[in-house]
Length: 587
Image 1 (tube, rainbow, N blue to C red):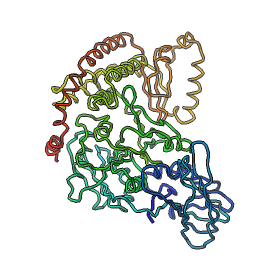
Image 2: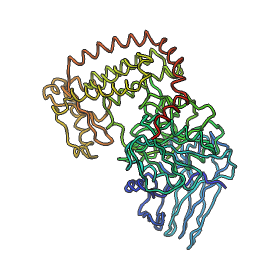
Image 3: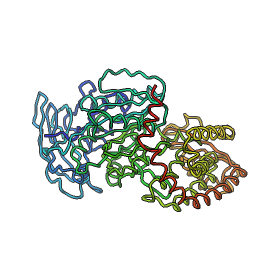
Image 4: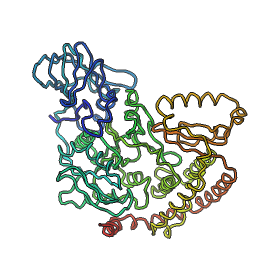
């Protein structure tokens, strides 16, 4: 039999030890005790141990829809008084008891396997199980198996791009190292920064020094190395250096792809916040009028209904590079050479992967919200404006994109976030320049420097009251949100009279609330990071005038730009061009 997925008793490797206190992501039950040395759970007499959790529910509908597997077995490893193991089918609205069988008493560790019946109910999305303990028991794990043969074997190369974040990098490596050691996988660390040393001795870890070509350049170099290895890899996994993942994510991903009927299938992992490991940043993203929109953002995965919502959601349009495993096709298109934000979107669209999400396949990463600034928003918006050009209208329409862009920039202006509005206009200006801009990466560096200086010179944060970071703990944030809602019940003149800055616990611009204020403070729910802004009528009017002029130029030049980019970017994005960059950058 082939092991499909190992139930995660508990996070056993660093940095997942940080998850202590969040056992509800893995299991729950009254008076349960976890023993880390033995990696087992003590379940007292007459108590129920449940694996109806984000990490341990089994996405059976995805397996039935995408693989050749027709039979499923469940296996429990334990010792002690035994009990009854109950298998449930999870639907959109209820649980269905599918099967139950007895676990016999045993003083030694034993393994009991049972074939799961009634799995073809079309409404069943996931499987979950519970153990009703007759006597004290020690549960080692619960696994799902099949007797079907695999359709293919995987040889996966893992690529992590890093730039001067050695501590984060070590955490990322350590989190997936057990999975690497137990498979044919190899890890390629693309070092864009200073010299690094890692405390791991393994012939499966390779460090490759690279010129700082950004995230796209690092991942392109890693993919290039995988393609040109003598024993060619079948799949690649891209991971950020400040992300960490469960070892089981790699195992579950690879096993699923080994059985998957479509050889173009890929797995995109969800992102959860490392600071609050139960909070999902997003399952992925889909396209909107302008840019992309997160799927199931800020969902608390401690509530099982949110795991069900993930299963019911549409697939994302791209694989995010905090965790994305994909097939290395014969004519794979390398990453776009000029993005620093949005590289993963263009890469997925240009290679047309069949992207699938699996429950619990995820990575934990710091919130992106603390990275919000004029330079980063310039890079993000430049990529979003380029996507409809490179995508040739498959997912975005030119007029709808520029209309969405205009709506977005006006919300930023009305929300007093002028530096971000400046960055968006700069992105629009640079895209319309053409080859003279893209042919020299120093143009981007110069633009980023000017935006950073502009943001610094025009910062008025110090003139606004700002809550201290300690005010934004979990209780403080809840109280702040209650006070914020109470303020909204006051009439407009009352809020203007007090002249207190508005507080938004959403990092999107809030133009309606800003209209009643002289200033706004935007607070991240994930980590308490703040952006403070002040009203400036002259700056706002100037931005609105420029936006109107640039929008007209973009619409007028769009067909010309699409023709230009189609004729010129193949060479700029080719492996030959990338190889020249790599050779120049070898240290």
